[in-house]
Image (cartoon, rainbow, N blue to C red; front, side, top):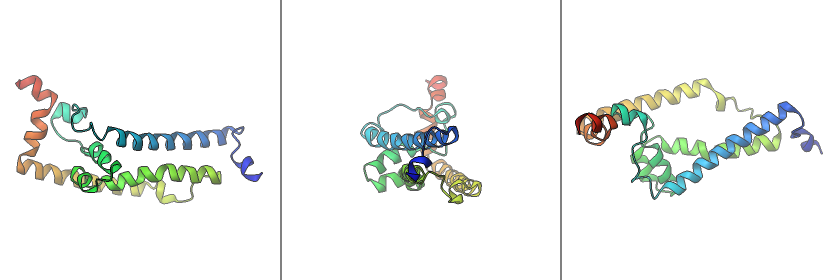
Length: 161
């Protein structure tokens, strides 16, 4: 009886809490489902990244779509080749609906402050920036930046072809 009162959606504040958790969980599950469903088609698609399309440069998340599709099919080695940080992010996406279910079951937000830590977000952003800078240097050195990115951009196609 007590649990029913805790998750009653008659209370507007509680209703917002429940709706947010359900939305977040649904989005995470949709991302996981799309990763699995799109895996056979991910290599044949067009360039949809605006940074790659316009500037001819990969964005920091370049390779995450292919990596998530590989992880959804349990291909860890390919995922690491596409983006080294993908297992961490994929793990967070898997944990999200579980955390939302826990919060909905208990009727309160998680007390784990590190989940909502700006310090953690800045730390991960810094690691992502360093990883991306290192990838750009390696790709510039071995020619991948020019052959796989610059020459496949929309701008390059419009101006030089």
